[in-house]
Image (cartoon, rainbow over all chains, first blue to last red; front, top):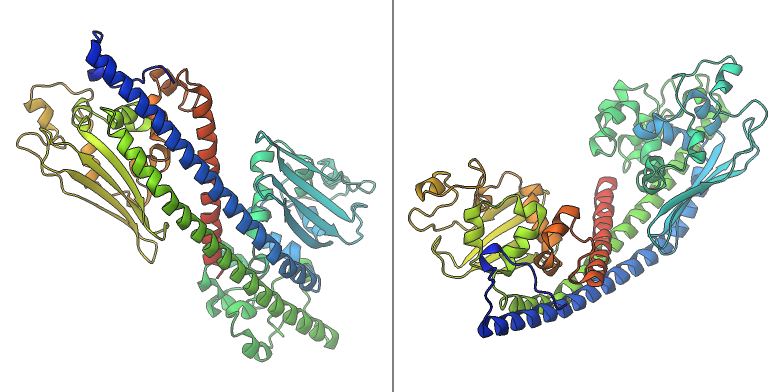
Amino acid sequence: MATAAKVSKTENKNNHDAADEQADKEQQEAIEQIDEVQNEIDRLNEQASEEILTVEQKYNKLRQPFFKKRSDLIAKIPNFWVTAFVNHPQVSALLTEDDEEALQFLTKVEVQEFDDIKSGYTINFYFDSNPYFENEVISKEFHLNDTGDPSSKATPIKWKEGKDLTKKSAAAQKGKKRAHDDQDSFFSWFSDHADAGADELGEVIKDDIWPNPLQYYLASEIDEETGAGDEDELDEENLEEEDGEEEDFEGEEEEEEEEGDGEEEEG
Amino acid sequence: MATAAKVSKTENKNNHDAADEQADKEQQEAIEQIDEVQNEIDRLNEQASEEILTVEQKYNKLRQPFFKKRSDLIAKIPNFWVTAFVNHPQVSALLTEDDEEALQFLTKVEVQEFDDIKSGYTINFYFDSNPYFENEVISKEFHLNDTGDPSSKATPIKWKEGKDLTKKSAAAQKGKKRAHDDQDSFFSWFSDHADAGADELGEVIKDDIWPNPLQYYLASEIDEETGAGDEDELDEENLEEEDGEEEDFEGEEEEEEEEGDGEEEEG
C-alpha cells in the first residue's frame, strides 16, 4: 500500500519538502493501520454471519417436524394445494385451466433449503397418479455455486401421450379453449432455467406460500383484491360478499371452534 | 358445515349428503390442526428472530472498540472524510463546491445503531472550528416508532453570518460560482425530514460508507467511473475481499428482516 491515496484537490501539492514527506509517511502509516482495523471489523462481520447462519440452521431443523405434521394434515384436505395456488394472486396468474386440472392431483409440496441455506433450495411436488404424466414427484432445484453463479435444474416430466401441457398445441388438440391462448403452462416452469438467480415462482413458493400455505388456502377472491394477510380479511363482512361457503371458518381463526357447528348453510 | 374452505370450482357440490357432511367435518378439523401447527411454526420463527437479533447486538458491541480505533486513526489523515465523500459517486453528486470546502473541517463521522437495531440509527458529524457554523457536532437521527412510522430529526445548524450554505443566495453573495446554481447544499439534508423512512444519504452513509470508509478514501476517480469496488491499483486484493465480506454480512441482515416482517403479517 505504498501509493498515496487520492485526496481532495486542495490538498494536492507538487512541491514536497521534508516536512511534507514526513506527514505523508505518517498518513501512509495511519492508512495501513486503518486497513488492519478494517480487517478486524471484517472478521467480526464474518463471525456474525456464521453465528446467524447457525441460528437459522438450528431453527430450520426445529421447524421440520412441524412441516411434516402440516403436510400430513394437508393431505387430508382435497385440493388444498391447487386452491392455495389459485388463491395466490401471482401464482394464479401463471395457471391455465389445464394446469388447474392437473394440479388437483398435487398432494404435497415440500420446500427444502440446503443445509448452508445460502447455496440454494429444492421444491418437491408430489402427485397422485393422474392422466397427465407418470411422475410421482417433480422437483425443481435452485443452486448457487461457490462463485455465486445461480443455476437450476428440474425433474423431466414424463407426459402421457397427447397430455403435454407445455406444448401450446395440447389444449387445441383436446378441443379445449384456454383462458389465454398464448399463455405458457405452469409446467413449463420446470424446464425454464433462464432466471435461476431470481426465479419469481420459486421464490414466491419458498418465501410466501410455504411459510403459511393455510392463509392462501383460506383466502377468498375478495381477500386477494384487498391484500392477503390483513387480519381484517377474516371478518364476517367478507363472508356475505363471497359465495358464503368457506369464509366463515376464516372469520376468526381463534373462534372458529365455537362458531363451527352453527353455520349450516347452503354449502 | 358451511365453513369448508374455498376450494377450486370443480370441487363445489351443492348436494351434501351425510358422507359429505362427515368429510367436511374432518376437513374442518384438519384445518384447525394445521392452524395450530402453523402457530407453532410462527413461534419458532419469532424465537429465531430474537436469537438473530441477540447475535447482531453482540457483534455491534464487539465492533465498537474497532470503530473507535478507526476513528482515532482517521483523525490523523487530513481531509479523510471529505475525500471519502467526494469519491463516493452518490454522495459526491450531492456536494456543492462550498459543501466540499466546509466538509474539510469534518474530522469524525460516527454511525450508531440503536440497541434494538431495527428502531433506528444516528449519524454524528464532528467538525473542527470553521468559518461556516458554530456547531462542533451535527447529528441526524432516524427513528422508527412502535407502529413502524419513520421520523428523523437533526441538530439545528448555527450558521455564522452570511455563511448559511442552505440559503441559495449564499454563494452568490460571496461572489462565487457554484457548480450547479440550483443545487441544494449537502447541509440542507439536516433539515429535510421528508424521506425519513428511506433517507438515501443516511442509508448510503450507514450501509455503504461506514462499513468501510477507507475504500472510498482510496478510490480513484477511475474507480468511480467503473464502479467502486472494482480493481484498485492501490490495494486490489484487499478492496475486493472487503467488498465481498461486507455484502455477505448485509445479506444476512436483510434476510432476517424479511423473515421478521413475514412473521408479523402471519401472526
